[in-house]
Length: 315
Image 1 (cartoon, one colour):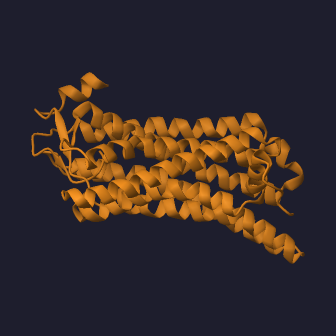
Image 2 (cartoon, one colour):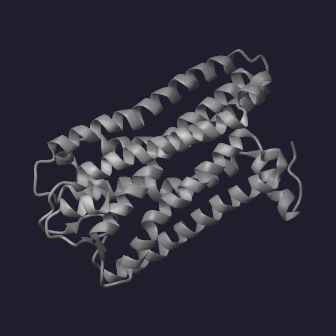
Image 3 (cartoon, helix red, strand yellow):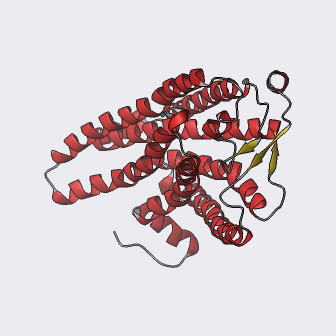
């Protein structure tokens, strides 16, 4: 792949990532903020993975998928944030052509995998609420592992298509990317060729990778809410709703900005708006995920208190 991409680009050996600001003081403030977010993201997601591994009561399909989500989020932010932090405190803000390709591919692979994982997690909630007696039989380890492998397959395959269609275009200058990492829409603006075909590919893949899983999630939750409304106990309804609220929140934070970024024509995109959108579904979403799942989840709280020995959580 490296030789194929290298032979199809013109002259540019590296790109310059402009980031958020050229002002040194502003960059120092941003560095502090993003370093804090990055550190808390790693600690929060790492803590969730550790708690799920150490507490046998969390060895269920729901928490297996949550573990995978945490791993994806840690990889997602690590693909972009460390380099962004270095560029904020360094005069050199370059990234090699191959480095840009690698960053683009890994970012897309993890993001696409996560998009489909959300649909799998919605199905898990559907089975748990609508077929509780058959939950463990239906959501067996083989099925759970196969569904995660399916998400990974889509991520690997579609990220390759995205990356190749973007990087086979000629890039002959200028080499300044008005973004904080190598994301497809930002890189395409530097291409010395017509990118209308890329816009069509992006829309089609965006439909498959974002709208299709989102539509599946909506259909699943319509069935879930219909089942919840048939529950006679008010307490039972509240408990059922609470198990879905975290997932709905996380899906909304991730999917909506992604659809705006990848399904609109490149000519309508504003660099500053693109950076804000990317920041939201890349950094902010990964930062908030462990907070959302832990604050609304008594099982995670109970596991934390059990592991630390600080006390007990009341039922």
